[in-house]
Image 1 (cartoon, rainbow, N blue to C red):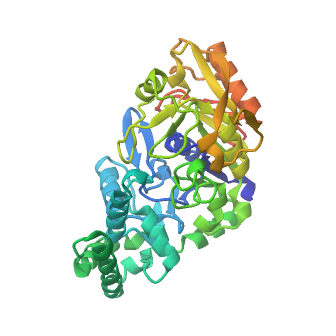
Image 2 (cartoon, one colour; image 1 turned 90 degrees about the vertical axis):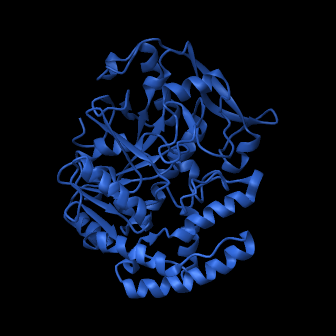
Length: 434
């Protein structure tokens, strides 16, 4: 019964509010699986006014009876995981082998990956990619190199880990010294630190793909939690200003060890406007008072980096592309409340280049694209207390309906604030969510 499963994927450049939606969907799921990315993803959940920011641990950890899984497609930073586990436990959230499993095949972000990330970005000067300097790209690169990769299974074998660290650090030290004049790293110190992390997580490590395939056979609902957003996908995003993994629903199968038919219903996350962090093209960006208004009302500062996000109007032309790419069944529209107070709201429904309409979205053409806008009336009412679609102002209802019409998908869930209760269940097809 794989049609019961749900995949949540961001349709923009990340920061769409996946944490809150995953938390809501986890209430009707049995497993929650992170299948891509690493500690460069920040998912926020607000429970009874208390804010939790997670980077590696799946958001299902706040629900009872959920098995949370960090899949093989994730690059795992053990230092960040240790901090998150300690934070959760200190704040009364139970987390351990009974509700968290980590794939033994997931790759490990090592200290040399973070160092390489920072050194490379500094060397690029005015041509920076705009990474979070969390070592994500270098770790995925070593995964492809194979001989310089470290996996979770290695962390729980101290003697083998020490030999691996000596071999890899020797190569890295030579390269970093030659390219960046960097000081050498101590492989034994690194191995000792990582072995300590390995000891902490050892009871949670296992063959998570087998667990999920067995769950499929038993008809359990699996919720796949994506990181970042589709426009940052390594293959289908605005390359080279992208992340280093397959973050769309296309990445679920290789990133978690399940067959493609396991993906199930795809829920695409869409912010009611558009944001982006770091460098790269952004056709609907508003580097003006509108952009600042959205930034301040939406608290648009990175969960991972704290960097202010670039803000602009909702780009439905790009969203139609990412919706088709992941085979989205329904949309979750987040932060609709941020638009309150604007006299008029603009929606991008197409692009032009050299005065001619662009008929097919192509990420490679964004630098030359000029957005084509529709203008809709705004609303002044505070909508954060709305709990049904009918309680929204007519202009807000029209905005939601226009999003549905342009994308050709129902809006299943509408978020009107950060709290769990500030969620409107609208045209969802997810069983049990109503």
